[in-house]
Length: 67
Image (cartoon, rainbow, N blue to C red):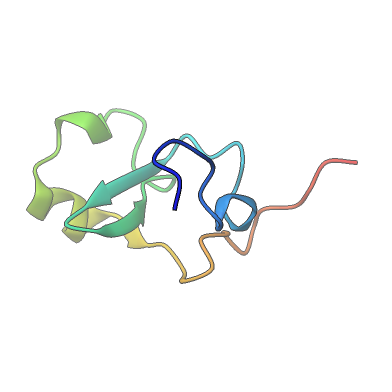
């Protein structure tokens, strides 16, 4: 196993996702937060309460590939 390299699930995550937050090993999508809420300033409990857990395949159902 190489120390520095691409992870195998690289293609299974929305490539342009800027709303992804990792909390305790689980991914959360902060896309639906109100505009005045800064996701980086939320605590772990705040992220868990206000954000939706990412699906296991790490691709949001609303994401579509650009042609």
